[in-house]
Length: 263
Image 1 (cartoon, rainbow, N blue to C red):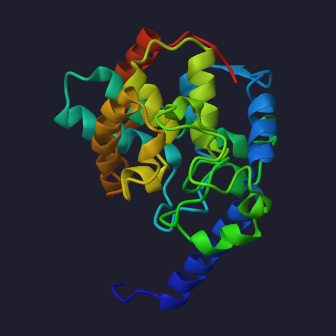
Image 2: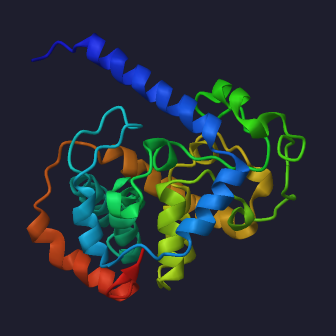
């Protein structure tokens, strides 16, 4: 069928907009602080990275207007596309595979969080919300919007303080970053940076929030921009033979992660 059903399309768009309205109202500095303390304990589940990939298959991401296939295929499409162009950067292939694993927060074993606390574009909290953040107008209903501690350019931060000192809206990016870091992954800092900021579109599309970045962030952003092309492009319909590529990715997981992780 070649004709597109625009009603379906506009319903999807409405859904995405409503998603961002809820997200922007609820993602406050205090909410993020509470979630990071709670989820940073990593006391919910012990499992391997691959088991987590398989668990993710049960979900479709509501903030994504054009992705209906199982998540594991998207993860492998991203990883395989990177592997083709950057054969020697095996850490980047693995980062492609695991970057979205934090979406398990939607699962009952992980608290079954609402979509607005798991997916969607991310942004710093604790300072002014930049105009470039998608559906910016809905921030006006966020309690931090009128709070003088949080609504200036720097808010609670300082020039060049480094993004690792900035609190981001809570979701699958920040959670997976916490999981990887606390389980002592040996991925390079660029890998962790990609995991933590791959949904931070105000930074990689609009160059917003540059005033908070350190020298290391600026270096790592180069890799994130490379990665991002694959994350978006790879939603092509190239089917991946999961069983065929699985041994390669299991070997990378073994290289960079413990066998079982605390989640």
